[in-house]
Every structure is written in structure tokens, then in C-alpha cells.
Length: 251
Ligand SMILES: NC(=O)c1ccc[n+]([C@@H]2O[C@H](COP(=O)([O-])OP(=O)(O)OC[C@H]3O[C@@H](n4cnc5c(N)ncnc54)[C@H](OP(=O)(O)O)[C@@H]3O)[C@@H](O)[C@H]2O)c1
Image (cartoon, rainbow, N blue to C red):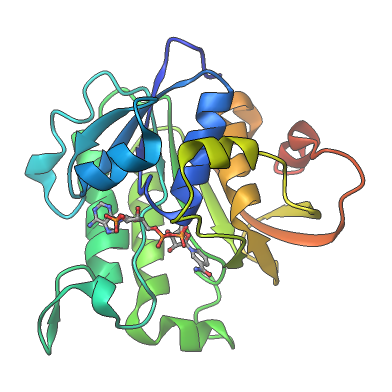
């Protein structure tokens, strides 16, 4: 169970899910340390509400001091599934920031830099256990699901308590043009009901708002520890999301 004295490192904090995770942690009065490759971008985004550490998960040597005093890590880093400028190509054959570099090697670097964690939360993807099935076979054409699964396996065998979250195609955001106050005001849950299930059997879309909520809410429920679950949105939400009831389904 997380306490107000804990410190949560959010990797990928400047991304769509990551920004919402930061806003949600602040709403719950939990101290946040943001890991970013771009200090100016993070400063502009989060003002003086969070501590900022500069690091790149591809480079282990940039992470060792960052993880000191950190009790929890929420890892929402990611790159595109298909080649794009975000892969940061060295040359036509070699990408610097491919899924293999970020979702597999980067996650292993974060794990190696951490000690005594109370929880490592990882935003993975639907399809990691169905890579040979449509549409995941197409999604995995450049290895994003292979890399996510490699990251997952490293987390599960790290010895740290973990929660692995497997969303479907992400909707809502990314909120890259929003400032922190706007995000805090946009704290209302997504409009559709949240469905979660152990394993990797759900099909559908998932709101970034609910992925971020799951990343933070799971820290409050020991029954979500050492679990990997899929999350989608389906149907209208009549009341606020009952995360305790949802996580109880994972038992
Ligand atoms: N898009 C989908 O439909 C989908 C479906 C299932 C799962 N997912 C996963 O959901 C997660 C969140 O998605 P999103 O769309 O919210 O992400 P996003 O907006 O693309 O953000 C990705 C974040 O990762 C950071 N990052 C990338 N490479 C990094 C590196 N080498 N070192 C440190 N940070 C790095 C980026 O930082 P910069 O600001 O410095 O670039 C950014 O903060 C990702 O893991 C994604 O794979 C996505």
C-alpha cells in the first residue's frame, strides 16, 4: 500500500498516459519524480509541481542516481510500433529508439537501476500473448509486442512486486499541448466503463485516462500485486469506477 511519504518515479511522464499518471498522483498527494529526456519540456509541462530527473532509459548510466529514494516506478515509456521519426534513426538500417531499445532493453535498464521497490507498474500492450493472431501479427511486424513481452518477463523475474497493464488501442489524448492545470481539471474518469481481466484476452479500445487511473489505483490495492491484466472500455459508465471491485477479479 502506498503512503504519502513514498516517492513515485514516472518514466515516460511527458507522454499521453504519463502526463495523466502524474496528474493523478498529484491529485492523491503523492510525491512524483518525473524521468524525462527533455528537461525544458517537462518543466514547461509540470511547472514546479514535481521533481524532475533527466535520463534516458536506453542508457543505464543516466539512471543510477535517478532511482535513489524511489519507492515505486510507473513505466509508461514507448515508441511507435512502426518506423517513424521517433525511432531516431542512426542510418536507414539502424534505429536508436526502436521498441527493442525502449520496451525491452530500456525496461531492463530501469529494473537494474532500481532497488527495494514496493511496486513496478508497466504499461504493456494487448496482444503480447497473441502475437500470431490478427491484428496483433500486423502490429508486431516490427517487433513491438516481442519487445513488450521481453520487458514484461524481465519485470516478472526481477523479484520486485509488479503490476503489468495491457491496454487495447489507446484513445483520448495524448494531451501534449495541455498544461498541468488543464490536466488536473480534466481529472474526470473516461466516459465508458472499465473492463479488466487477467491475462491477454480482451479486445477493444482503452482510454488513456483509464490506463493512467489503473497505473495509480493499483498502488493502493495489494491484490493487484504480481498480476498482469488486460484493460479496455466497454459500455456506458453509470457511476465512478470501483477499482477495488475490478482488482478483486484478478484474484
Ligand atoms: N498507442 C496505442 O494504441 C497503444 C496500445 C497499447 C499500448 N500502448 C503503450 O502505452 C504506453 C503509453 O502510450 P502513449 O501513447 O501515452 O505514449 P507516448 O505519448 O508515445 O509517450 C511515450 C513516452 O515515452 C518517452 N520515451 C520514449 N523513449 C524514451 C527513452 N529512450 N527514454 C526515456 N523516455 C522515453 C517519451 O518521452 P519524450 O517526450 O522525450 O519523447 C514519452 O514521454 C506506451 O508504452 C505504448 O507502447 C500504446
